[in-house]
Length: 411
Image 1 (cartoon, rainbow, N blue to C red):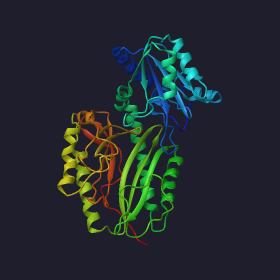
Image 2: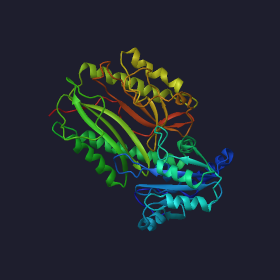
Image 3: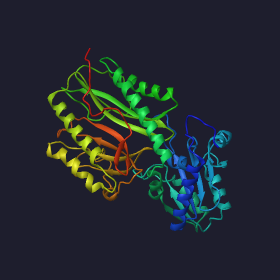
Image 4: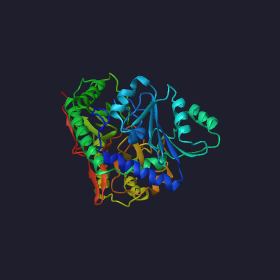
């Protein structure tokens, strides 16, 4: 068994066996001889990234790594640095851990040759969920095509992701623990907010909460703007030394957890009593947020969800397509992505047509984010809660009262 650590939570042997067994059964149905799963990229926090590699290996190499996962033989984890091998072997659930050189291709090619995949059907899994279309570096793709010209390559990231989306009981238990950690950080952030405190100092509170209990965070947003003369409707990803002032609205997005399992809270609160328009925005956000959590049930699709987001339009507001009412959340943003008003500005992430037919099932983790925006795109509030779908409906992973109007004293 892996040695306990603060980076990769130890699931049971049965949990990892379930993952391997389920994926291999589907590989046989698809006629796949092997998967090459690429790991890279994290956000800007203390997480390790490489979510698709970690799912089978329980380890992420620095810079990048591969899991070679044949349909029958033992899997292999290939990392860059040979001096990291002892540590990787202590932590990973894969026994065959190798160094593949800094660019990985030598080790990758050697393992594919050992598996006699010169004419094999190889599935490529990219490093991130399918919100992004990254797969493997072009240099790696060219190397495989040149070294294995008769192999058949196909991208299967979305197929692979679908296994990760349905959470086991062990995974849900870890998500619940992550939710409690995120609640704790949000409360400490709220209590520390006062006129004069720097946005960057508020972020450090989040870092400190995670560090105290061996948790991680992929990112956090926090910033404030004047309610009388608002300058932003989305909190800063990289908080600055700008300070909180009286009469401002504070917007936050916090994600904390363990391994690559995170809770996430979207919270808005006020330094002094909110103006009439901000109060109206907040009340609209509460109505949509609470109704969605109360009414969403297994079997519903993106087409069903749009009924709630239309309430924003009816009230004279817009909603950002890049921030839908429902999006998958557990190990970074992932499917589903639905609940946005067609034609709304800021469509930096398109509402994928396939997500309109995505069927919510027990075991899916989603964020419910209610985010009304004024038509001039100058005023907004948001609130959001991470939930898990059960057979009876959504179960909140947070106790944090984001749907309660909260005011920080101005002095």
